[in-house]
Length: 152
Image (cartoon, rainbow, N blue to C red; front, side):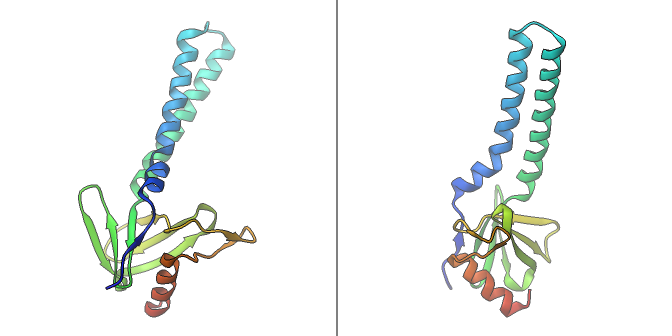
């Protein structure tokens, strides 16, 4: 059995909590405007804008938090890390797996699990000609081989 490859946990947590931090920062800016400056129509509009942007960022955080997972890939299995457990899947359980070029993410659909899972590759991927991306890392080699072998 080969070694499992996965992305850096730091990259995962930074991407996962980026929108939460940005949303809270927007709300903090709105609070500063509200409490420190006089209530002019211009300031009220800025406060409403910051509150709205913060809400949008928190909605983005909720979506990303539910779909972005830590995943380890090996020649025999795929392991999806949840908060409390590790779910192991065979390559035959994979419905589809593909690289999303502009976002440097993999998109995974499993037969035994509802929904889509997004995860980072083990290394950064350099896009070729700004449209196509090829994962040349060990993880990309494993994914390509398994896609050919299982016809995914």
